[in-house]
Image (cartoon, rainbow, N blue to C red; front, side):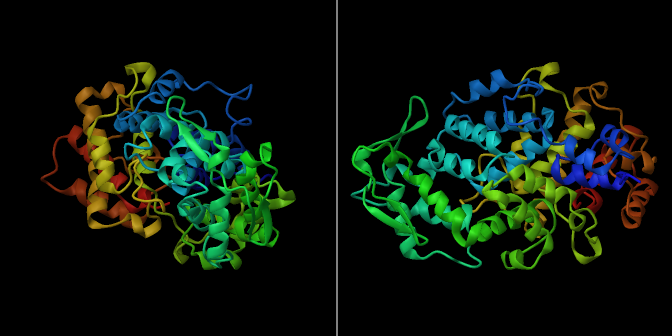
Length: 463
């Protein structure tokens, strides 16, 4: 007997890995082989591969990559890409890596640099982590953000080297590197500047420390003057990090981050005991491939992920960006091919700020909160407001542009509309209490209110 996906399977899978399910997703995939549902989320090869569906916003993307200061236009562009993409898992992974390699707009890097970094994250999102780590080291936005352009032989700056080992590759539990490793890695990273016209990196040999270094017990650098290997020395640091302890430390750190964002709450200390983390880590590093696609597929098909016990705390609080994109999906939010680009209401970016997450504006190099860290009195109000703005915005435009809302009292219809398998008993009771209130408004307002109430319920916010 094939292992068939239930409605709850589809709702959870899309809710965690694809910005949420719609009624169409539930109807399409319920009863299909579960592995086939997961595989359908993966695009056919890297971006640009023959056989891929085109992204309809490529012209707008190129335009944004030439901008300098209008970060809010870039934010709206990315929200649209998340909503419209035929490959939502890839886009969700792009958001994951944006959090992992958190880089913010502060004037420098400018918007165009961040957009080009965003393209690079997408290119490697489900590819080789080795390639992604190397690409981030020479990324123009990152060179500005973590002072890479200030790192030179006569003034070594350790900022990027420290974060490369601590936040990007190895973590701190256990901390396998020393302050000496950081200093030596920083020397290996010297020599880069940014061409502000092309927003690309340049290697300047006279700024580079050509000495022999030792990083994590591995020889780095010491190449002959003028050798092309000098410009590639940063890749030797990547190899030192990935090779340490046979790749176990780095792969477990990456697997821990993936489980934390797509699975359930874990701590760095769980990296050596949690079965799901262990298996995802092995899949990533197997054969020294550092294969992110294999790691993510292992995660999404693993019984410890699929059948994780919610009663044991194995649930996931979704981020504000995920909830706003899911809300737009179920509403049938206007697409660019209907209205033209950047049609998101401007209030959305301010409501997302109140909810605690704005793309291209992470709070620091460590990225955003996760799990229960997303939830507070202020951020919960931000989530409520962002759903209210979306619903009212479509109503003001004219509801014929949205997918028809269910009748206010059709609770089963609301569960399906919102991409859920069903409501919990507590959520159902609360919705019934609202509907029974004699002060409740006319039917259209009740429908809009039901959308906001369901969208702010634990059933929808916590997967």
